[in-house]
Length: 369
Image 1 (cartoon, rainbow, N blue to C red):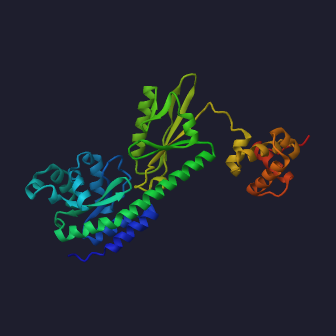
Image 2: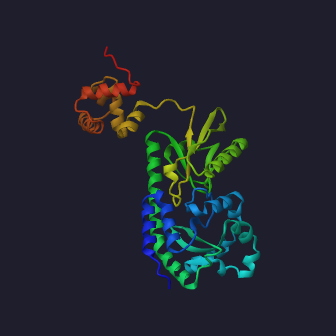
């Protein structure tokens, strides 16, 4: 039985779950401890793969894997069922030595990079199944039965870290949606399959009729715009780095086109196990300026009632007049004013009125009549 320090691999995965920038370090640890050449963490369901973490020593083979389409004809995916049952699978579970010596996957793809053998370790991640694919060179040889037993034990230890990473990714995505919603910006989140898996309320209000979400896809009645949008999403998911793509104009009858900006934020998508791998920011050119209440809610996180009162006070109305105009009791308006003081950080009504007036008028000083 090999004397592998599996605790170090488990610790590396746990650290990467909390800090996605450490995934490569975790894979390097797994590579070193198992006496292998490199490793990559890959989802068995496929989807866009360029942002997957892999070790530097197999960078050339991974580039060829993607560039030459081997990811679409990866013979090792035949072993997924076996990996699910046993926790580990290797090449000799799938082929004998003679088949490996003749098979294009091994001779045309792996051999030029000096690679031949792998151990695929099951990593369960919520409702997804991932594979820690540990690569060995021709000279390093295949994993022994004793080593495969150790890898099966490792499988049981890594799923918790993967689940944490995915949960944190979901939390980050929810936070991003909330942040965009506060600013009144419509956003939909995209997974590695190019599907919409979440949208904020601002996006949901826009996506009705001619442009909508159907079966996880952003669907446009304009066929030309649909082709352009699909191509932009595919291009975006194919990048390893972040960035903002040129807008795609989504036509609407009787209105100006809705502008869709595909975006990939490096910080948000560094977590390969997270659902969110990209987003689409939607801008409606026909939307007028936000009403004062929306501005106050966005900047200070006031409630709807507080924002309505604040907007009236910013116009120079007294608290009594504002209360009467809004149809609320004086005690209610006083309670709301106290809450506004706390959220805006001011102590007096005159100071509040001056600040709100400047904010709602683009920073220009208000002159009292």
